Image (cartoon, one colour):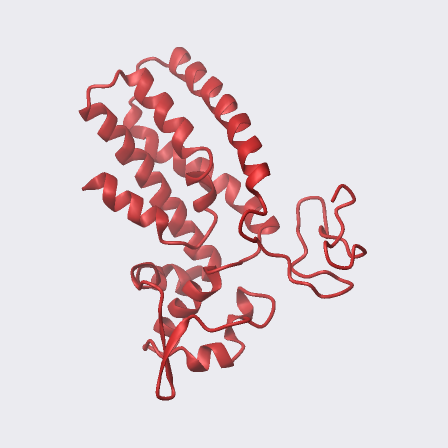
Length: 231
């Protein structure tokens, strides 16, 4: 692990550059992707470090600019998410259920239907997934394959995907995350929390894992959280 070599052949390099992760092992062609529990330790350590850094910055900014309108939480969060997005996109390839959500979006955009058979059997998804998908996330009805994933995220992603592919969808996730930060601040304000406490709580919640992480991944969790907080 310390040599940053492939966990299968232990020869190929995991990183192709200083901050760019290879999509596949250059030696054995193993696809590098997230696995359940793989990053649990790193997430736990990173969370506590992140909370400390974000808390210090939040208190410092609140002290230096005490009259700042904290409804700007949307803009602050959005800038942070967009600045960090290129790094996360470079080192974290599409994995797990993400390509299946993008596949549905692709079918809605190009085929204007929900039959995914031609999408799974074709190679259009190579634009956002480097290898053959190992399985189909769908229900077979005759010759058709219909998705088992919820459709809210793919429907919302059609326009961003048309404009920028996977990167466009990730930009959408950044917008959703920023809107969630704004709504969380409004919620705390309505609950009569002091502005300093509200800002610190929103900063440590939205600029660390899991919300920060979800702005770099294609999952419906952020949208569900935004609907819940807004409601």
